[in-house]
Image 1: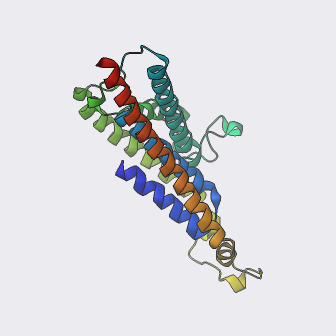
Image 2 (image 1 turned 60 degrees about the vertical axis):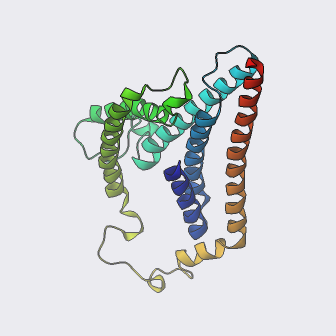
Length: 232
């Protein structure tokens, strides 16, 4: 879970530095969902046969988290990281650099499938859940995840090349703030927006996520105790 925690805090740091809720808080939510998937799969008694409403609630809750995290991450890949998914461009993007459009559609479909498979690896085989990946498939899933991330990098680089015309990132000359005709530089405005209010929001978001994580573990411990008592 540590990589997810690190990326979650990096997104909060970006928000604290820039004062822009979007995309940084939205990106942090993606990693928060993945953390909850991991905790629920690791601690909750998902391996129990559904004999009462209690076990069913756990399995339905984890399934909801699984689909929510998969769809959220997939949508972020396509729309934010790749700059695709625009309805006006046939659910692709403007100024495509690769010659074949079907390659984009195939990659989008592949990302959806492999994203879902990767989320399953967040559930350890020791949990005994019927929908957990068998141990012998983990090595294959590692290879597929490396392949997905490699492909992701090519399309991410394409999107950066297309969008880098903004903010003078593709030109040699960057005008200074007193040459733009504006009274204040954009970075000065961002600093004015940030401050105590941003820090309060960062602390609040962190406490909410930590609270959900603690609640997941506590409820799992109670469920395990109650299941042990029923067996006795």
